[in-house]
Each structure stands twice: as C-alpha cells, then as structure tokens.
Image (cartoon, rainbow, N blue to C red; front, side, top):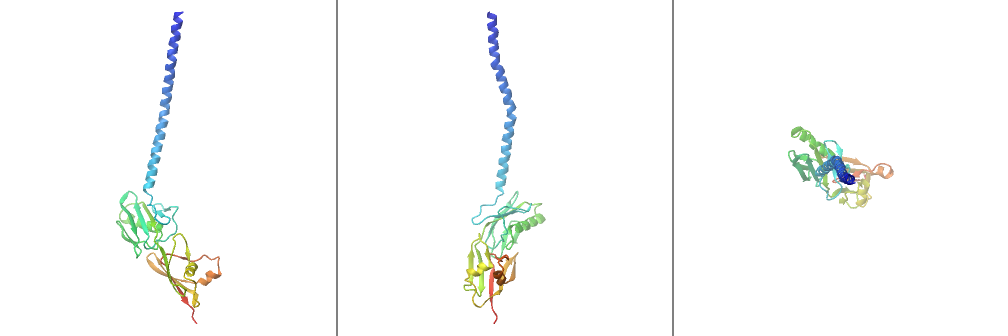
Length: 244
C-alpha cells in the first residue's frame, strides 16, 4: 500500500540522523581527556626546560663537580675533588642572572664574584665553596638564595718532589687518576742510597693556608693493607737524608 511505503522511507531517514547524534556525543565526552593530556605534556616540557636552564656549562676536561647549596644535594658526578689554582669554576644563583659567573681561580687560590668580591676557594671542595657562598649571600644580600656551583675546567695537576730522589723536579699527572706518595717517588726514579724513607715531608695548600705533613714511607712499604697517602695538585714533597 502507498501509506506503508511512505512510513518505511521515513524510518530509513531517521536512522542515519540518530547515529550521527550518538557520534557527536561520544566526541564531546572524549574532548576533556585530550585537553588534559595536552596540558600535562605542556607542564612536562616547561619542567624539562627549567631543569636544563640550571645545568652547569659542559666541561672541557674531566667530570663536573657540581653542588646546590640550598638543599645540600650534591650532583652525581661530584666527588671530593679539592679546588686548586687555574681551575675554572661556574656560579649561578636562581633568578639572579646578574650573579652568574664563570671565573678562573688565581695563583693565590681566590676568585672574584659578583656582590661577594674576592673569595678564597682553593683547598675546598665544590660543596664547601657553595655553602660558603650561600651563607655570605644569605647574610648580606639575598634571603635564602639557591646557589649552584661547579668546577667546569680542571687545571693541569702538578706536584713537586725534592731531596733524595733520582730525578727531583716538577711532574704532571692526569686528572682522572689518583697519585699516591709511593707513585710520586716512583715517577722521580725512586730513592737515592742516601734517602731516609722515614723522613718525608709534604707541604699542601688547604683552605688558603699552607700545612706541613710529616710522613713515613717505610710503613707503607711494609703494610700493603694500609690506605696510601694521596697526592693533591700543588703538593711539594721533600725526601730527607740519612744521618750517619
């Protein structure tokens, strides 16, 4: 009948419209999730960018020794390296761009820093230097400063050995290796026949002051389990002579 055909055609027209409405509703429900995902990605990118901004410059030789004095957290690459003249250090204070500095330690163990002025850092570790800088800024200039400090270039490591050794003089060694007292004597060709291994002295710059150590190598030669005495850059060793 003509009336029945007309109803069927109406039914066919409504089905696509109903399907279209369902699809639109589903898209609307998914939209907040996509916005939230985009927002999280944006925050992550900002966080990564801010972390990169606080990273010290890439070193030209050797690992970076970096520390953040506000939390006393030392970076993974930090060790007990003691700063010596001719090292290059990097300083940054959070949100204080004018205080950022990259300076070379002078022969007398000092650096000149913005606001602070001349400061002695030779003989100190990066952590010790960062803590001192933070305390000075906190006391005189900035409330609770966030200080980042790093050694970004290492000077050539040298030591001097004098007295009763075969080849007294100044010697260099790699910054990646540890130099012990016995190693230093070996580099100088060993003892002379007049040497007194129990009469060895060593001069060292520590915290801006020269200290004198009285050492005996005989104990190291007999007791291999004892920890060896390590040489630091700038040390001066003197091997005494026997008394007849």
